[in-house]
Image 1 (tube, rainbow, N blue to C red):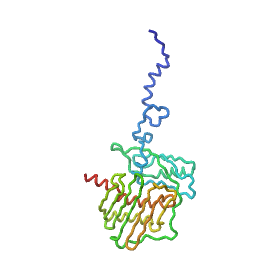
Image 2 (image 1 turned 180 degrees about the horizontal axis):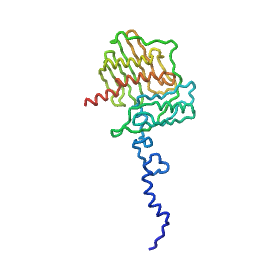
Image 3 (image 1 turned 180 degrees about the vertical axis):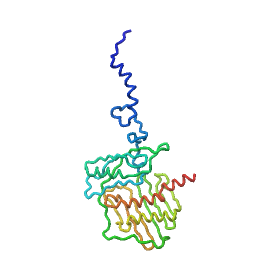
Length: 289
């Protein structure tokens, strides 16, 4: 049998590679130089931040505005990659846009976002996700300002939220009364607890906090509807309303932020959901099982 002489350099490499690669594989940022080594995205550092979806980020959001008002929206949207610390603050935000001004504004806006800390196995971790910030027209309100009226008879109070959706999101009506009674009626079964009816009760303080959202929104000084013609047929439509004494007001949001609807209207919509939306009933049933 004939043995071929193995070059010394090859022998050295055989012993050198195992010594080096394990330490190189420790770095999550080294994927270009070592593409065949699996990343360790355990969330223990900003470099090894665990990847999450935009929807998961939104679910944990405390404050997460996605809108930049502009008199001349040309591009319309800016992508941004965000790293969140275990404390729920933003460690870094890298925006991408052909418009340098929007790129800077989007990065600055994302840096203000705050979240309930993301957890894995009971510990808070670093996370990373991609999101989109929209460039929208300036906010529009009627020229005549109407102050929010004082409520004399709280028993006459009625607050409603209607969410109409043709896709995979819930479609339901929600009514909250001044005495704390809550009625929920779902119309589709594409999301858990969406196609059911519930009746419940919330505290007087919760009702007052909800009314305060309408007051902060300067709700009676909004247009009755904000409808975007460019919105597709599958765009969800949301309608909020409040009535008490002899006063009443409703606002239709159909792609509203793209035609000047103040972002605070979305705050009102989400506030009603937080108080008595589908997730509230889901959590109550889970606890009762």
